[in-house]
Amino acid sequence: MPFSDRLLMGPGPSNPYPEVTAAFTRPLLGHLDGEFIALLDETCDRLRAVFRTDNALTFPISGTGSAGMEAAFVNTVGEGDTVVVGVNGVFGKRMCDVAARCGATVVPVHERWGLPIDPQRLLDAHPNPTVIAVVHAETSTGIRNDIVELGAAKGDALLLVDCVTSLAGIDLRLDEWGIDIAYSGTQKCLGAPPGLAPLSVSPRALERLLKEPRSWYFDLQMLANYVTGNVARAYHHTAPIAMVFALHAGLGVVLDEGLEATQARHQHCGDLLQAGLLERGYDLIAPSANRLPQLTSVRVPESRLPNGYTEAEVRAELLNRYSIEIGGGLGDLAGVCWRIGCMGHSARTRNVTMLLGALDELLL
Ligand code: PLP
Image (cartoon, rainbow, N blue to C red):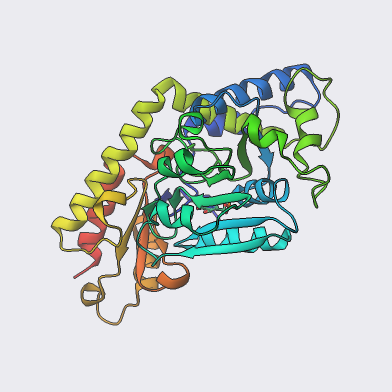
């Protein structure tokens, strides 16, 4: 089968930046080679810049975004701990599952999928939770959940935030907002392939890490000896070298463009796409005040599907005829919405124009 040249405008992965593709295929180094360690250190510095944090423990976990989620929970909660979790989409739900598997008591705060969670409801949900957890950018609905109020009023709780789809795409300030643990993924607004989960832990959270987390691989204290600080680099596991090259390059592209300029590009493309969809009479799921630019959820226009086509067949046609991938709905929104990503290298005005043109041709 020939290599395809897809335009990836789904909920992820986005198309990698060309610099990332080049870095991914460069000759390998050994994982304890000084040259690799220097590149890993620089990658961690670059992550601090995009997370806007001084946290010493900031590094990419080996594994996809969900590995970041596991690492965040398994090191902070166990039996006897209470975790308040905001649930307005698939990934809030996943956080509940992960926290429960760590043995914690989970207090979910549900909101209708497609609406943001009122931060006050999370703050009021329990008098003294160990952790308050929320997804910043809910990829399953296109909603931004507000974080600032949580950091300001979290009290003794640790604030744990899923930044998989927000990092580098929209404003995110770990230190200023009082976020204690954040994790992300490489395949969204960082414009790298999936495979690493950037993670950052505040000094406050570091003091409270469990001594013996129920995971060997994700034990942050063991990992810290390998990936950060001045201690001798002890072998922990073989880092996915090529992925670190790719992440390093993706972060380089973002920082060369400028973090604010990268975020502005995402905003501009999201605005353009959403205005184009609204002009054509499509219905957007997320309310404008909390609508993500990098992930637009649009109600499936049932009355405009070509004769006899299901929504899935329209997406397949978009892929086969135009080589453009968009995503279907998940969970409560399966079959109800399409999810269109404008992330990383895919966040370009010409891609928006191409997609809108293709929809004009395909739909009634
Ligand atoms: N959290 C959010 C908000 C996501 O969008 C995703 C993936 O799309 C994940 C977590 C899980 O990440 P991964 O699929 O890379 O494991």
